Image (cartoon, rainbow, N blue to C red; front, side, top):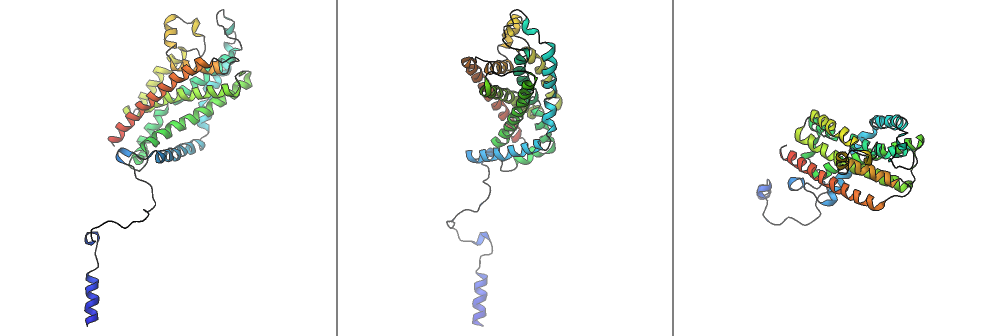
Length: 304
């Protein structure tokens, strides 16, 4: 009988839940493994943000690999321009004052690479709107995923796409008779500049997509900027042959900066000083546009 009372007393003294546990410090030891949660406003340590960027970029690239025809169709228009305009305007270099040593195809390729980068990245906001409509973006925002990682993954995926498309145009231009006297280094600089202008217009497109959430707005922005910026650059014609007011706009046109960077980089005598100045201006503009995109993304995430 005494034993039964003792056992009954011991059972009744066992804590029944967290409220019955004695206060005091928790026992020391390793914390259980698992994903590190995001801090306030989705802030995570820098290394964690890099890891999230890596995995989220991989997610986007896997989707791109499953649809390779997207890349193929995106270069159809530049290829048409490459061989159609290359033949149609091949005598343009004979105009007095044109001042270019080489074939018109040599002159045209850097312009088409810059135009292709700007054109394709201006549709980036469509992808952002699609992820909002499907609820994918909102699910990421309720997860421990880094907000910076989400935005960086978009920029990285656009950069990879731009690189592949630019190299396709380079190879097709080479097959058509274009020559790149600056060698591999010159081509690398030209592709890097195209990535820069792609980041500029891709970030602005994402900002428009998250702010207005309207496909019509993206189409309107594309229509408003694409053709004017293309013809207010030296992509098809030397700026010295343009009217004065067009020359003034072209000198401030980031698309024209990229065209001039690429054309100089693949020439036989690159002007690295001018290339460096234009690359610096393009970098500053890209950082500013990405900052605008991040601000609109944070504004969107606060309203979810």
